[in-house]
Length: 379
Image (cartoon, rainbow, N blue to C red; front, side):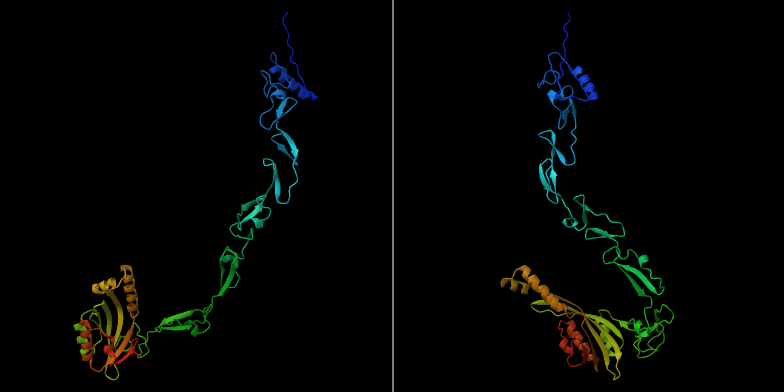
């Protein structure tokens, strides 16, 4: 007679009918010779799928009615990984929550906006960067709408105002309504140009009109483009440009003819090498028949001589210190650049002698002290 083996099933709890049938089918499929599911021993062929009563379940799953399933905890519970069961979570203080992994109360990242950066807000206990609409700005952890975002937001319905939005899209945005009337009287239109006639137009909006003066008139300080020296003494005569030709300029001085020129004078000493460039302009005879000449110091270049640098080095100065001293001396020398003075000469030969001395390297502004001069070098 063939031997019949019976697979014994042990259940700690009475399952409902449907679960019992499912479990029973699993037990039968897993039943092997010499194994008993539910005896507390993991025998051959028993797995979490065939007999979780003995083999247990994987991970955090629990064995219920010999079936592994995910535990379902209530909102006030947490799954204890050690006990594989739902445990009631303890109460936590304000702005803290229970962390199942740490099994303790831990603080939230934030509970109010003040805990976050200025451009963030506390959302679901996390600081979240705010994303505002185009016409909004961030202020005190919130998106706010400014007074205006573009010029069209400031239309006041007045045709005589120019409406604009100042600092648009910012907290300080404001509407500005500027009157299109730029003047109310002629004095409001002064453009500091003596060659124009400045008036305030009568039509609205009232604007300034600057008409060029075309009338040729002596001694008004203006030389319109249509005028010349013959009909307006404010206009320059044909002036000869001698450039750097001292002989040319000296010849013009003989008859006090209008002329311009430039003189680069070498004024070196044992310590410094200096070149001073002066522009000159003969402006013609004055009312008392003196020749009027204007001078301007255009450029001053200064450097230490090699002998002077050697003396400074012997005194213990470094190359950098000497260079700095040279730069400081150049700065002082450059202070006179742009200085102007005007002299009236009864005898222009005196000026020719001064200019020749300068050209020979004997430069001295004091040469003009005995003449009728005014300007930056003369009080």
